[in-house]
Image (cartoon, rainbow, N blue to C red; front, top):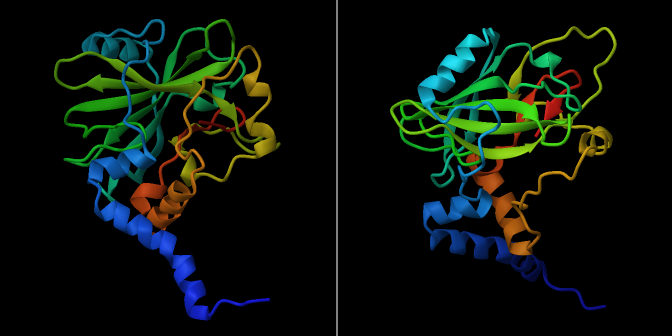
Length: 254
């Protein structure tokens, strides 16, 4: 059996990473960001009952008289700038624990208010712009033809413009609520919570129709997988951002 020298093994091990570094150095920050986080699109149809007029939308939310939760988080999220982090403030609205992943409210409700606190850079995963330009909501309503819950990200401009809908996905059950654990209202991002139980994350939440399809961020190409690990090690900004999470009746995420 022929054994390669230690030096050759080291070169073989680090050559792909070096190639990724070289590729990144020859690529613009925006192109690198889009490799990990595709450009967010704000072309999703607005959920039923959501006005495209920002002031009408704000009035509608105020009329629901949903109390903001005491639970407020300021979280580091990936920015569209290369290897940078933006800080996002997320606060739950109303009693999120009443939300059921398989039986959503008949009338849509906001469950979280999100503000990008960075004065310049946009958050990469969902496309949150600085809050001087827009604020964002996680909105829960029923998937058409089903009672199952779906989550839609709404963008509400602060000055003119129209309310827009972006990322939309089915709400998934993450955990069973343990007996005796008090109910709480909370909204956050999944990377800051304990991992979902895979046996609960799929299955029941899919009932009532096919899931909303989403393109994989990492299609499986070895180079992209290496780039992903490399970026996560170098800068938290490229590896940290997962989907939204609310403390529903059994812990819900997407």
